[in-house]
Image 1 (cartoon, rainbow, N blue to C red):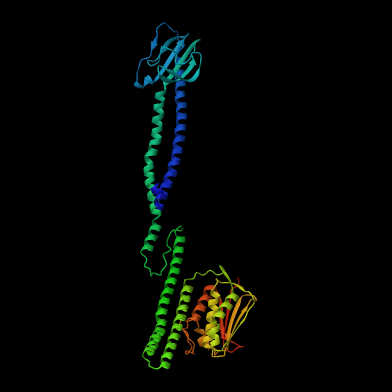
Image 2 (image 1 turned 30 degrees about the vertical axis):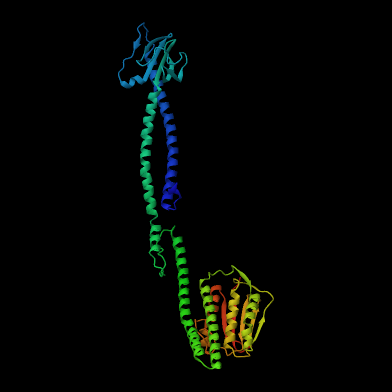
Length: 444
């Protein structure tokens, strides 16, 4: 049973086919045995009847008082016996036949009898004369020997061929599973950084597995690429704020003036805030790169998430004396996992806040007519067509480089839009004069 429980497909198939074949062969052997036995017994009974018919033809001559015993001419002759009775007197018999009737006189036909601890198959028939009976018998052991010899000649070759059949089944299965072994070898020898798909020149049964593995390798390559980008982005972008924090800390330590020291410490706090925000955005990008595309799998209340994120951004917006407004229905459910709407709105509003001057206006609007739509507008300087086309490039920042940003906010927005099939439109706001961003959700 240990061979059956092990996960080897080769052994499972081999044992299954051998068990099924052995069961079928057992049924065939039993049927062959029964059929051969039936036919052979009928044939031997027919021989008894034929022998009796010959004796009947030869009997009927004048019987004298001499008792006749047939000579033994062949060693197998002792297996067959005959008797001829006339008027209840035994007038002739074979050497093996007893002196008492092998079958009751007056009872014709086939019967099984036992004499002297021997079993006989007996055929009795009336002779040509009145009160004459011809009895022919055959030892049952002799009939069994004939039956066993006949069955052995038919069944023994089948039994001897069974191991050869098992070996052939094993070889055929081994050859048939060669594509799986080759596929396993290819996967085992595959380099972790390999991006080329597995060859699809395989059998039809293995092709779905190859397709699934290729899709898995493609997802793994994208995930690894995202991790590489995250590492590169973090190393590239964190270098500047960390260096600035270190420099300002050195200034604060070496300054003897309280005002200079306070200014340096304020710069250190600003650098920490920038580094913290940068790490947060990098982690958001990393999570988005690892997120599986499942549009429609979850829903959220876009208005509730927007209110929550705008409340979080309120203090920094008020610090620049900017006006932040929201226009939306009470409830709006869209197909997007909870939390991601807050990421979209937060990055768009944060960009508008950072790149707009003091006392600017930022307006967020949700529309539920037809397809869900998010519109974010501001009264800032806006962008020209060339800069608009580059929005979403990692670490790209607009011409107002003095703003405290990393350029990752739009990368996050573009990534979410690509993952969930959102339409992104960027142009100049007619009403507010600054940038206008429109995100439209696909049909449900």
